[in-house]
Image (tube, rainbow, N blue to C red; front, top):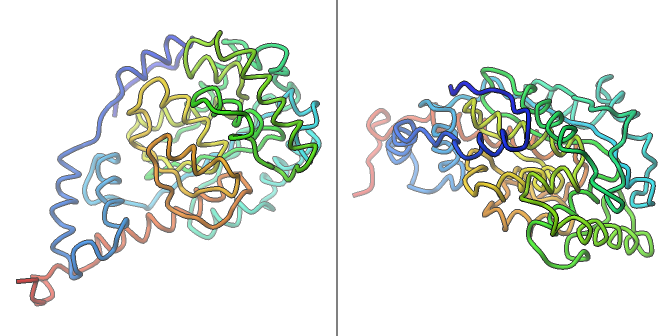
Length: 341
């Protein structure tokens, strides 16, 4: 495991991103060697086979394990919520955090179903970010504090880390980040989120466009954009992705907002998400395009648009299935089954 110091500035984060550890190629090679020996036609388990190699490479061991999956849901409030970009009021963020903590949300049930430890990290919910159409959503100090919170949340000994969020108006921030990072029009990246449509959706796209117009040319890189257009929970997700890499913990990214958060790291170092998988493609219209920009193929496509790490938690079952087959199946030699000629 790599030792690292928590960052005190965006430059410190950039330094960490410039020196990321790579995959454990020896562990990956062992997974690649075992897979063709198992009693099945080569490639017949599709992506389950490559997921074992990926897990081995980023856990740094073979066989890979899925005994201790963890989930982190970050919550933050956004100043742009006051501009009518969401179908729900800002106080719903606090109410939903209470629901998570009481065990009443979808993510609680999904984590229970697959034996995943859940932690919810609320980030200054009584202090929304600033309206990014008028200035930066966060100062550098605020952004770095949120990144640190995300980094500190990554547990030791996790086999995989599921990441998700809760924050009214955070699809607006995610859309603005995607547009600022990858270009296009606001309408390309702006979707219904919690269910806005018609004039409200058009207003949301205008807010996204205004934010990008104000900040894109002033920003140094993806991390700077994260502070200017993001939110505390988005910055915390980015921090958790970074710390997971440094601790050799593979990551499952949830939907559009989570993927946009991680994209800010990809914009600084294109290898920054090699230890991550996009768990599912959201019903949010721009998510598929965003995943493609990151050269990611989501594991699931179930029409989810809930957030709160629900898709990532579901994908834990896929990883558990992959590891169970890889470690539990007999080889051709063990089973006395003839391999192909």
